[in-house]
Image 1: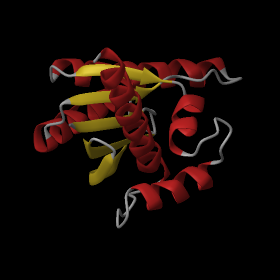
Image 2: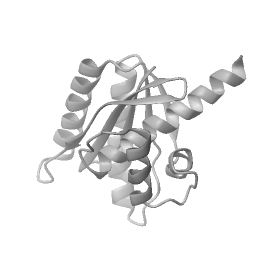
Image 3: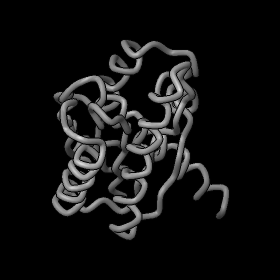
Image 4: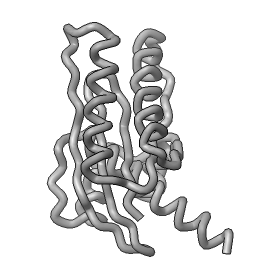
Length: 162
């Protein structure tokens, strides 16, 4: 199954595509959608949507997963993150994909084994799980981790359903 993971952000949305076959994971592609901080909110959201639509058309995933919003101390930042996340969910839904959502702690637990892992630990495990993958940046790494978490949890759910 081809899975796309998304790490939403208004400034830099990460995306990562993997192929999951049983317990075997293969890196397909990853990248980041960086928006111009001087552009209007609407223009930045449109840029994220257009870029993700192009990624979805190119890599044709069968499922999508998005990291859930964590609440910042700054309400404005949380609201903007939520808007970017909404665009991510919409892009996946427009592509006809089933969409899963995972808390950051659950993603870290699936990839590293502990929900309190540091970003450096997640990136180190990505090198083990996806050997040879060149990461486009920290947000792309987080997106690949979301895709891996979905592969693990979807695989477990499928086995339990049988």
